[in-house]
Length: 101
Image (cartoon, rainbow, N blue to C red; front, side, top):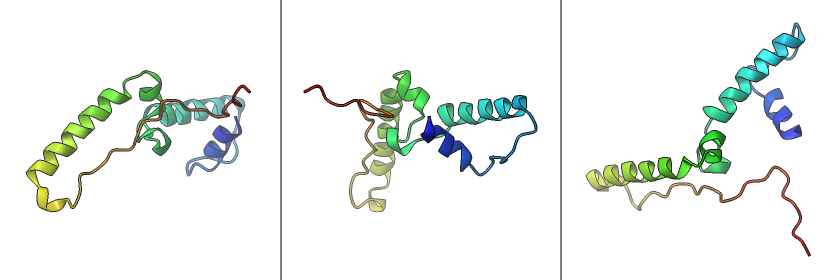
């Protein structure tokens, strides 16, 4: 997709040119492995696309909430309000289909 190409192109480690097709494939394999399995995305509640797709993001979100609450309870002077975790979208689209009329 165009969005993926732009993300790849503006990545700080993008080499600009590849010596061969095999080098380009290897780079993309590493980059998209990182992007989908290790990089936390703001658009999906600071989770990886993999954890959202596999349905484990809510369990991770629950653990994060417990950790934040435990820390807040132990250090109330550090918080003026209860921290809120980003929401996990119920549905995500690259190109949202038009609603049926």
